[in-house]
Image (cartoon, rainbow, N blue to C red; front, side, top):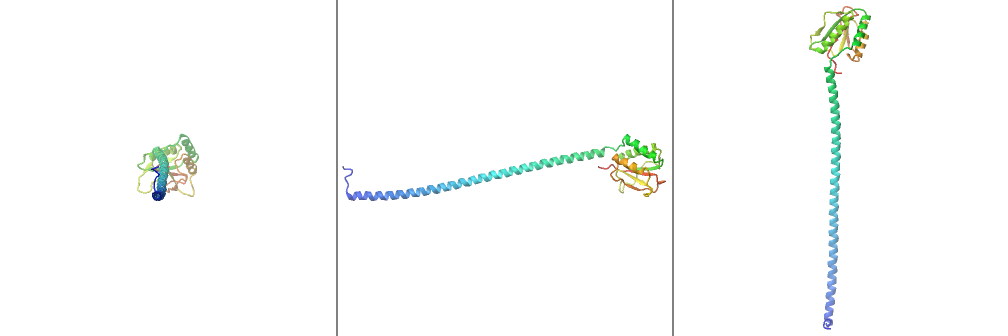
Length: 224
């Protein structure tokens, strides 16, 4: 056959080129495999980095969401506290605007205390330029007068407003050693009516005619 009719020398040449081609092919295959593995490793590394970045982004987003949630919670708590503070402030304002009134039951009891102690005299002063204090002073004046007590002078305002002004209702006596018999029950009942504080202020009023007389000073309405 003409196709296989070649010389031995030519056949050896073909054989040599075949080996060369196989070696070159093997080298190319090895290089290709190396490139393939290298490229795969780089792609995997990049994918891993992208996944880390994505996870980091999600983590940061969760932290921001948690921070915003905490901020919103704190804002709601502050709003609640502010609303409660406003309510308390409004209650204080309403309390200051509401004039002090002695109930009818208390009026009857105060009269009884004054009557049982015997008729004496009293002095009544209120803070000037305070209509609310003047109104309470007039209520007390009516109670003392109806109980048979005598008013020393007249119900008058405190003219000197430069010094410390009384708050609530304060009392004065001629002598701290001999308190008027009506003073203690009178103070206790006034405390029940929340017209004076837990500890009433009792000072000296030497101008009183006797030790059973009482000086009453009506001050500004307390804030509490």
